[in-house]
Length: 269
Image (cartoon, rainbow, N blue to C red; front, side, top):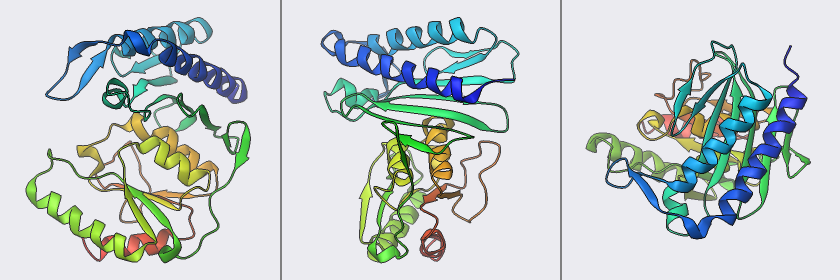
C-alpha cells in the first residue's frame, strides 16, 4: 500500500530541488528544440526532467512516469508520476519570473497528490488526498467571500489557435464576468492561479474550451489543491470533470461563489 504522506514529502523535496537547479543554471539556458513557431524546449528543461526521472526511479522504481519532454515511461503500474519540469518555458527563456515545476501522482481514476514549486517566489503548494492544502508548510483554506461582485477571478485567455467563432464567444463571456466580478484578470499560469484559489488569495478561476489550450497535467495538481482546501471544481455546466476530459472547460472557486460564476458563464455561452 502506497504511503501518501511519505510520497507527498518526497514530491515536495523533489520540486524544491528542481526549482533550485533551475535558478542556479539560468545563465546557461539555450533552446535545443523548436516545437512550433513559439513553443520551445531548452537544455534546462531536459536536465531538470532527467534529475526528476532519476529521483523517482530510485525511490519508486515500479511506478510509471509521464514527463513533458520524454513522454510516457510504462512500468505497467497503477501509479503514474506526471512531470512538467518547467511549466512556463517561454517565460523562463524571456527572463520573466513566471514559471514553476509541477509534480503529481495519479492513478487512472484519481489525483493522489501534487506539489508545485515556484522558484523565483520560493512558493511551494502541496496536498494529497488525505491532507489539506499546504502553502510553504502552512495549512490554507479557500476564501470566505460569498459575493461575486466582491471577488477576484482569474481566467485563461483564448488564443490565436481558436476558431474565430469560439474566440468571440469566449470574449463575450469574459466581458460578462468582468462586469459581474470585482476584478477579472487574464493569465495563462493555470496551476498557480488554481493554487491561489485554494489558498484564499482569489475567489475563482475559469478556463473555457480548455482542451484547446491546456494539457491535463498542467492543471491536475491545482484541481486537487482547490478541492482539498474546501473549494469546488466543475466544468462550465456544473458537472464533475471525469476521465481527464477538459473539453467542457474548468470552473474552480471557493465554492461560495460557484453558482454565481456558473450563472454568468452560462447565460452567455
